[in-house]
Structures are given as C-alpha cells and as structure tokens.
Length: 108
DNA sequence: GACTTGACTAGAC
DNA sequence: AGTCTAGCCAAGT
Image 1 (cartoon, rainbow, N blue to C red):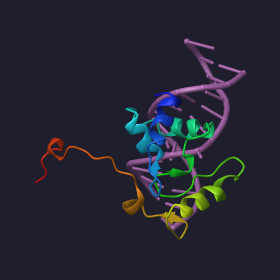
Image 2: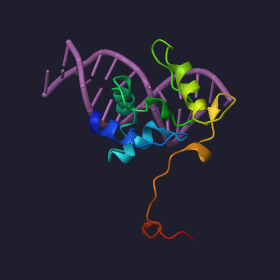
Image 3: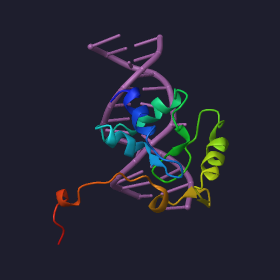
Image 4: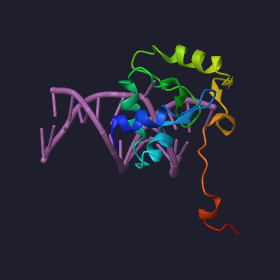
C-alpha cells in the first residue's frame, strides 16, 4: 500500500460522506495499515478531499499542532455532515461501496 | 537493513 | 466514558 494508492481511494469519496483510516487501508488491500494511511494523509496533495477521512470513532483525529482540526470539521459540516457531541454518526455518513451480497457468508 | 515516528485501532481495565 | 497497551504499516533517517 503506497501513498498514491491511498489518495486514489480518498479521491473517490463523495461529498457529504466520510471514511475511516482503517476503511481506506482495507480498500487498499492492507486491512491493518490504518496508521500508515494517517501518515499518507499528512502529506496530502491538492485535489484530495483529506477532510473526509476520520477515525474509527467518527471523530477528527488530533494533529501534532492541533491545527487543521477546526477546518476539517467546518468543511464537513459545509458538505452536510452533521456532528453530535463532537462526533459523526458513521452509521449515517460512512461511505459504503456496493458489495456483492451473494458473496457474504451465510448467517444463521 | 535497523531504528524512529505518527491524521490508527481493537481490546482490556 | 476515559486511559493504556500492544500490534501494525509506510516513510524517512
């Protein structure tokens, strides 16, 4: 999983939706590389909607210099993503890619 | 190739 | 609901 792979994925996240670092890692084919995704986002090139990437709790992650955190929230709210007690309800705003239900393991 | 450094996470208290 | 911890991964030294 390279940084460019991460950017390629994040670029496809639509307005008003968010993804978690772990989710991006999984989509890139490396499920446990959430941390590396964070590293990639740190050096995010223009054109990549970095603000649509949040942590697994639906919160905006802390930077070294808490800068950028405020703008991230504002950008998201500007796209219609709602915050309740500082958190985003991922059940509602998480970006989901269509998947083949027929490939899921039988349940029950 | 061996450290070090984090916009991470799931699990355990 | 907070706080710790141990894994983990890619980049930069």
